[in-house]
Length: 111
Length: 111
Image (tube, rainbow over all chains, first blue to last red; front, side):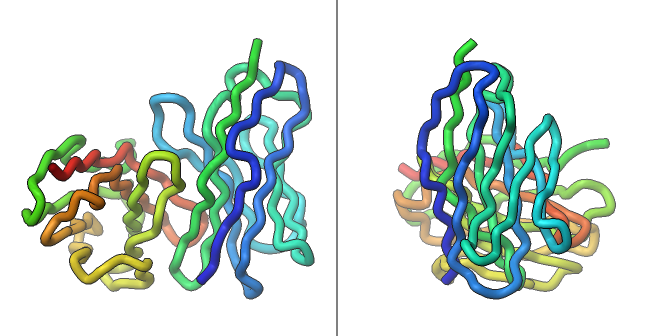
C-alpha cells in the first residue's frame, strides 16, 4: 500500500522567512502528486500538482514544488512566507484511482 | 458557480445505526471521491466514482458503500455505525485526475 510521509508536523516561521515542507511517498510506479492547503475555517484547496514533464511546478500564491523521482519526494517551497500563509498543508499521491494523503503540516507564520 | 456541496453539515447518530451522506459535485465534474478525516490526520481515501462506476476503493470495511447517480451526485452509506466512525467526511469532485475540489464536509458524531 502506498503511503505519504510529511516529516514536519508543525512549522513556525517569521514573515519573509523561506519555507520548505517535506513530502515523501512510498509507491515506485507512476503517480500524480499534489499539495493541498487548508486555511483556518476553510475547506481543502488545491495548491499545485505534478503529473509529468518539468519536475519543478509552480502553484498559486508563489508556492512551488519539486518532484525528485530518485528520492520519492515532492517538497513544497516558498521563498518568502506571509502571515496569510498560516494554514495546514497536505501532500497527496494518486495512483490507479486511489489517493493517499499525508497527515499534514501546520504552518504558523508570525507577523 | 456552486462548489462541491455536502449535506448534512453535522449529524449525530447512535452506535449500530445507519447513515447516508450526500454530495453534489461541481457542474460538469464526473468524478467524485469520498474521504474520512479524523482529527490530527490527513484525509483517508474511501471511494472514487467516475461516470457512475467505482474506480477506486480504500481500506475500509464493507459497512461503507457508495454510489453515483446519473447526475453525478453521490451518496456514501455507512451501516452498523461504530464510535470510531466519528469523523469529518469529505467529498471531492474533479473533471478527471487533475486534482480535486473539496466540499466543506459532513461532521459525523457517533454516540
